[in-house]
Length: 429
Image (cartoon, helix red, strand yellow):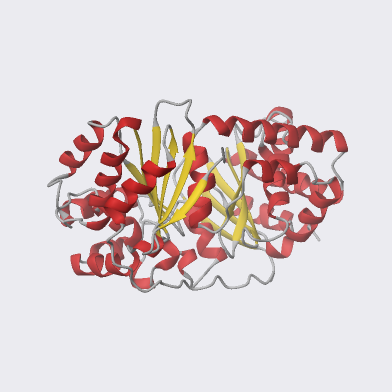
């Protein structure tokens, strides 16, 4: 039996079935290829707004409560998320009710009522205000960072949108955006768990097979990032700690070194032997947690390192962070260190074979994003990565002339000056 199956309806809807017959549940997920990077400047936040609206009642389920109860009646608890490229609706359901689950999702995706828009607008505005302090300043490091990485491009906008746009988006705007992007050619339906491929095909065909295809939409390419010197942004905020994010631009996920980037993240902050964790936390006690993450889109991405520190520790923390990055660039990993990291990574991949949500991302989102990789493919390629591969990736991208830094919190001008001088002195070349 194959790990997964991909089928396609004549109208363009793709289906992914991941049979896991030993389980007693099904993860049912609908991926749509629409997100923040699809939005015009005056629309920023509309993808997320529209995601919320699909919970506000449909032709078959008059209210959000009716919709929630319909999912609960088949063992589900529906949820959704929006990122730069994808909107995802998902719920765990009982295997006996697969067709009912597909039917409810079809009702949401095909027949939303667009009711209670003003109530939902107020909810989203409350959510958006969490990113601002009492002076109206943006304090979310992720939002500040993407604005630095992609100024004047949709990727540089907050996914939730500006307060101005959230007040301005109308019902007609939502309906037009829905008609443009919610269409069968943009949809992948994925079922992971105790499911049969034929049953999935039949259920999706019954509910989505007559959906008329529209014109496939294209997105604006990400601008090529040309290193032009380090850049920092500092925002004063009355918190007890300073939140710091340092980032380095990466190419898209189709780049040949993508697997090396993913391993580099683990070298820096995954597990007990991670370099940043050992230095900043275990040896020096400068932070409770430091985390490195890769954000990889089709044609762009970045490696971000996040930590929170007391103001008195900020300068030393930045200094040691730069030291660790320099060592990672300049000193090759030992075979033993790399082997331990790869072994841990493979363990996690094997564990994911038992996790319906992980497999839905791998095979469902992978199909939608045109980045479909099997577990065996990842494991095979991981075993071939060498210390030289990781050092080449570090030398290619951990560069001072591409570094971006965001600092939010109760910093002083003297501390800011010290950090900016450190960045000039401790170059990564």
